[in-house]
Length: 73
Image 1 (cartoon, rainbow, N blue to C red):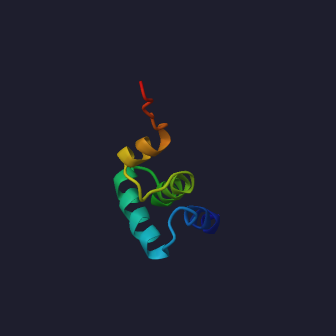
Image 2 (cartoon, rainbow, N blue to C red; image 1 turned 120 degrees about the vertical axis):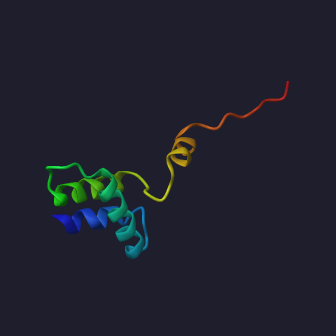
């Protein structure tokens, strides 16, 4: 159900208004012609459940890569 998807997406976005804004923008960008808009919205909410939509791609890449530390010679 969509309510389960919304509550799952709220784990990364604390504000429901912000979640609505991000989901609508993502749905517009990811929607393919000849597909249902509801399916695209559900796919966006599933993606928001697994990743943080507030971070950009470069921030997510930096967060996932281990930090290299320099050692004294």
